[in-house]
Amino acid sequence: MSRIVLQDRRYIPVACSALIAALSFQACLATVQFFTQDYYSFLRTGTHAALTRFGDLIRSHGTVGVPNALAAFIIPVLLLIVVKLLHDEQANRPAYFFILCLGSAALLFTFSRSGWCTFALSALALFVRSARIKRPPPYVYTLLAIGVAVVLLSGIVDSRISSDDQGSAQDRWYLMLIAARMIRAHFVTGVGINNYWFAMNHYIPPDYGWSFVYVVHNVFLLVFAETGIIGFIAVILLFATPVIKLYPLARCSTDEEGRIALWIVTSIVGIAFLNLVEFTWASSIICSFYFLMLGLGDALLNAAEGAAKE
Image (cartoon, rainbow, N blue to C red):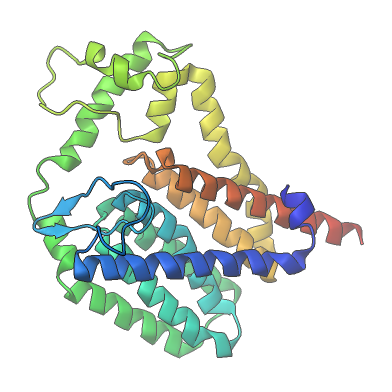
């Protein structure tokens, strides 16, 4: 489909603009949700949301329904805006900076520690690589420094990281122990797709020192446990193959297609990192968004192949 719809490179900026528009909507909604703490009147979206709290505050979830999944949607589009801010025409930079601030606020209001870390590391890598291609004006550095300072001084990050998380970080480790035991028992075939929930209580280690039993918060271990070694290799290739194919274009090309390829590579690596401690890929919206990026990457490769033949 991507070769049919996006084979003309003129449509690639249109696809990027649509993603930025979607982020703007989600960011506005998430910000209003946080400040009003209103999830039931005109802000209600679809079915009943499973609200997640931090202290007395309800964490923003946009229309995605889960704060961590909203963070997984916000992060790749924010990285796209970083690329646009660094390399697009000067007249467009104020608008991109405003959207970057709005999206960053929405990411902040999800209270997703893994999302914050993923965005910080991905944005830093993207910024360093992009600056080597084309150095942005000095004021861009100043604006970004001010933005980082405002976030850090807001107190939200410090309170989220330093406060008692009721063992949610330790949950990840203990749930991985259950997954590892399940994988050892069903290394080749797995326990069956969507059977993890029903099987997990049978694989609790005898010395399991934790009261919480749930689906493992790691998409790679989850796939391994349910589908075996073949499924595990498949999901690894699903993340690794587009990075391997797009990286030469991202590394060597300095045009618009090269910058978009760099964004996709950075986003995929970031999503893979996020899914080591979350299973945001279980969200249908995030899964669809990921395959949309794969289609866009395929279109970039198709455009590059066509240009090479001309």
